[in-house]
Amino acid sequence: MKKQGKIIAVSSPSGGGKTSIVKRILKDYPEIIFSVSVTTRPKRANEIDGVDYFFVSETEFEKKIANNEFIEWERFYDYYYGTLKSTVVDNITKGNSVLFEIDVKGALSLKKIYPESVLIFIDPPSFEELIKRLKKRKTENETDLEKRIDRAKMELSFKSSFDYIFINDELEKVYSKIKSLIKEILNKE
Ligand code: 5GP
Image (cartoon, rainbow, N blue to C red; front, side):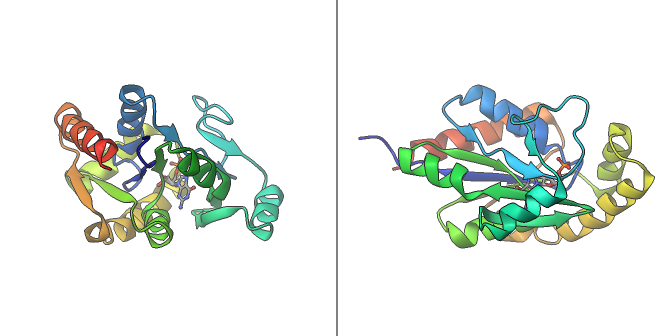
């Protein structure tokens, strides 16, 4: 019999390193479906519509809120981000596991709706290191950067609500631990 699909969420403050970890999980476990979120944030140069996010206008996003299409959504900085109900429902009923890369509040909302979901927090080695990584990334302008730093403080204060916390000091080391955890989760009945 096919095992039940698992719900796994990976969160961290911006710059915490979750995107590279999520990409590696998806490569190592091709059976896991990535939950593509909907956002009104402008697309970054390396992103693909429909793969990294569904990029929509504010009006389209608000229409989806009104139509009750989201499991959860957040207004994050100046943009909306939301998880589509259909992604979760369609996959879980088919027995597929779904991986979410969402913010801390989104992850906690997910847990409320699906208590069996597993929440993983990627913790930056220090606050100073987080700021350094954010600045190095250069994807944001100064105002956005300030907002992300403020938001990071709030996100870090929620980490104790997560099921697992991994300190991202050395990517290879931390990833091998996460990879083992994912295997364990997928193999559970
Ligand atoms: P970014 O703009 O850097 O891609 O994402 C900003 C934040 O929004 C990240 O913490 C990301 O994980 C989070 N995020 C992405 N999609 C969703 C979603 O569907 N719901 C929520 N709550 N947060 C999301």
